[in-house]
Length: 244
Image (cartoon, rainbow, N blue to C red; front, top):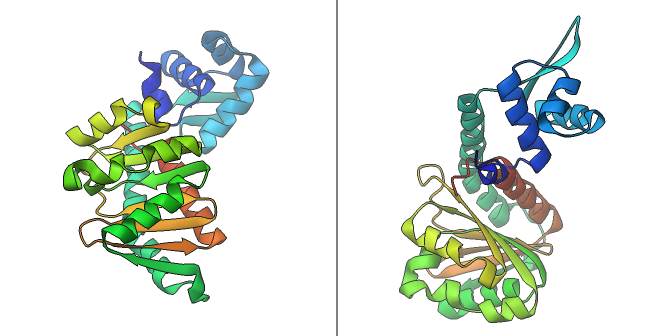
């Protein structure tokens, strides 16, 4: 079994071991699962309880005590698909918040043209810390990938680590192959679930949106908005239907 498959779904190593043990054993108590998974019972019970709350395991109590069982792989895949679909459906509302929901207009800065998009890219790339990005395919393909190749070295010098989510395509697979070289980690969703037409990024307390087709974008400086999008990003990163 390829453990990386479960890591891409948001499972830790211990969670993977527990899920596979439950899948093989059927409904069992924490002691039996811990023995099968090769971890301590005290750790096993706490981790399994959290997994049950997240929908990864089923939990019930009978005369034997608390029992855990693995949800079927089909149900697990369906859960990941529903979560990814929920995010995709929420994008228009999130963009509406960026446009209408912030009272202090000075916190939104608009940019136009290739030079404007370049300014947004510089702001994010030079920020340091972590950059989270929902990436549009145009980022990889427009003008032979000019946008993805800009500012890579500067981003590396500023130690800005990037995590990015994309829809499946030959370009995204090639993009993923060089992750280690460019201080980046990429996860890929099925194209029928995620096929973004705008790139959305979160860094520091800011959110940027870039439309490469129409050559415009904006940066929103709002901590609440950035925190909300970060939570959504992490939900997809950890629980989305990742295929690569």
